[in-house]
Image (cartoon, rainbow, N blue to C red; front, top):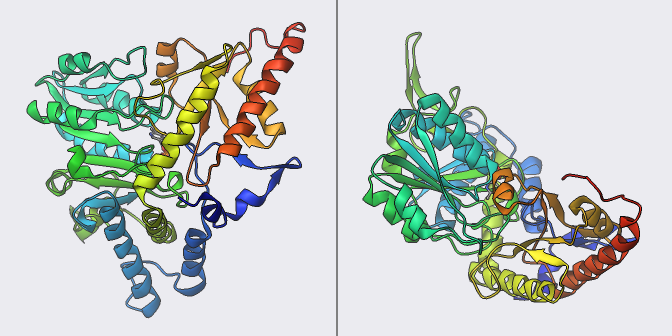
Length: 419
Ligand code: PMP
């Protein structure tokens, strides 16, 4: 993979922060966008901006064709059968909510259960909590082991025939763990349940194929895979989407309406009420092209190498605790850690002064941080344009923070502060 030539596609990487070259290591939150994608976005507004599915005029026709084709492109990207199985949403969170509201309300009731895991993002965890509360269903959490992997035996215990839905992150956004989705899917199916995979951290970083995974649903976000904000995707098995109730009502999603009732449009439009994210969808298809040109296997290898390098370097430091699977176990290009008792926000401020962007806090996984028994962590995450020198810049910043902490601790500055 030619990282230097990839970097030329991302003008933002040339900018400085506080006089220092930008070192962007917050890719698990949002990735940067190559000119191929931003150009596609701008072209839409400059050349054929119009509402889709509505007008008979030329611009509307061009916009509709591009927007509909974008569904096929994203379907292809994750191995789905075509546009009928690919719904565009606002983000991964909305995709999870769409399933929870549609399927959850149809299938959950007292005596039934949803199984999820202790390492879920709030996007799933809070959503299932709420749907369970409204339907009277139970939520069960597969436990996380000390090494940051899921407890496979516990999964077998909690996934029984009361379970209607299993909802699991393919990759943890804190631990980097790659979960055994295929095994969990088999367990779910053997017990008559369906499985929703949160692919927010996996689809951008490795080859993902819904058939190989055995996923009934797959949720992911455009802005984490070199695409624009404001667009997410829900892959759904066609028969399940057909059976499922819409989540949002309004224009575009109907076929026929009277004062008494309405019938629904074909898939996937039944789930896309109102004017959809047209420019975003078309630009996301360009992002899929961009990533496929690099090759998702190459993306995975690159991330893996950088993560292993950082983990090895951090292991040399006695004051650093890194979370998630140890080096050698499959994981993605993100590493969460703490440096002694340096507060994460202070560490990220010190890094920011050096131009290094990382994330500190609970990363929308408060219950997981309770399990880890830490208030928060600092997370460095990589993408196709990240270099080894940038990881070194992070390591220099950590060294700097560790040294400055010794002086600052005496003044009590770090005492009693929470993330
Ligand atoms: N799931 C996981 C694992 C994530 O990392 C994220 C984003 N941090 C989400 C869901 C939610 O993504 P979005 O905010 O784009 O909806």
